[in-house]
Length: 213
Length: 401
Image (cartoon, rainbow over all chains, first blue to last red; front, side, top):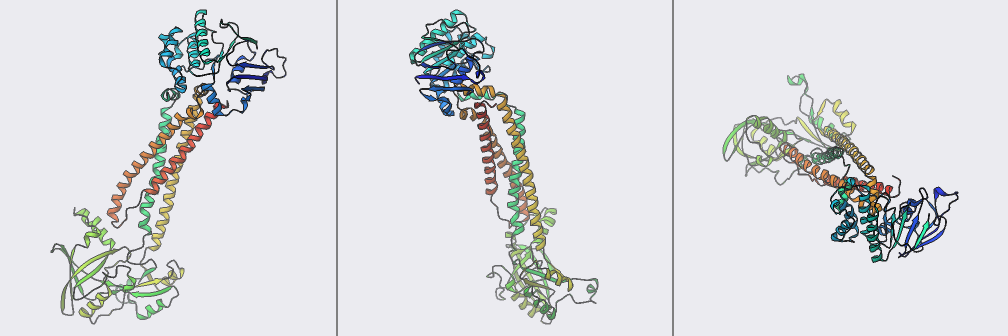
């Protein structure tokens, strides 16, 4: 997939409201290979945008097109395939499984895609400073540690676009720099586009475009 | 990886609920299958035609009153006029007379030439056309001196269950009876003759010691030439045994029907009713247990909704996340089916042993109908389970949960 286009897209709840946004009710296109920052205030529909693009919610007006085809028409198997091979999302609420260990949370995704070897995954745990937590239950980890696990999980699949929804809200500068580094290494190796959303603090990287939601 | 998914989705499984389903379903399935199997096994005993008499034959005798016992009243035997009257009735197709031996008969039984017990007895015959057996054996030749005999089946039962059991003697099957040496001594008219008897079969309906008519004629002529041969019992061939006119005629002429055909009909009917009732109860238990399973699975899916949703969002297909629960239900249904079969087999062996002792001529019925029914129930329940789980997961996919 090379392009994600939004045509006059607007969350249904905003209908009839005066919305000042670079994205809502505009015609914009995210290109593969670009690094984009979406800055938002609370309640401007940042998580809704992610949910629409991952196919989780459809309560919007206008259209969202992947390479020109309307995603409303996608079937269950289309979405399953997209979520496995084309589009990866780091959820703001992480959506990890607290009953499983950190490594199992990553393996449950990697087992599906078979994308990364165990040593590569272990290397990421090492670099992100949570190697000692690999066998710990995620439910017992701090939110900052969980964010790092969720990032690793988001990376163990092939993708054309990677969306990260407030990935560093609970991380210090050092760890967020490492996370940005790993993320961009992986995105570049796949030639993928990266869409980072932020509600204030954002990853310190060079962005091709910055949108205000 | 499937084990990781299972590790996640098995959270909140209630062992108590599943055990409840398991035993309820096992119980229900077992009752349904046993009902059908028992019906199949027992039905032939009720519906089989007697091997020696066709179903449309009735046996008629005169009702014995207190007066006739003293010899003062009407005769117990049928006169030629009586027979002609019955023959002329519209329901009657033909009439045959029972002819009794008019001389003394002493019979001793033994094996391998050693006499074991002896008794006085009598013989009766009906015309050969009324006897529906292998007529090649149903012949008497004075030169050979072997009398073919058909015994009432109740004799065997009385021996096996009354005598042999209490005296710790071995039970005898119908096959073995044919091997017993039977020496028959006929005495009368100043003569005596020793002949061999051979039991060639048993009758459930004909309550007499039956021998070929040719033998009775020969022996009566030889040992009791003077005797009165008026029959005490008649065998009547009718076109329709349930005809009301028969009952009416019988009552009007103070006759008795010696037959249990109507009782057999009733018994078969009750057997069917009871079987259907038992199967319905089993079905009901099965349906209720199935309901427990569905509730249990729904509850499980409900409690694990968030996990299922997260799995779907990270790229798992609905088919894949449904699979553990579908396998769980199919597995349980399968185990229930298997255990039902095993239980059925055990219980059936138990009751069949008893039935074989009581009805040695019974044929070994097939377990196929019960097994097929079991598989059908398994398939139907499993398919509904599969669809129901899938629907629940699709509700989560569509954000309706």
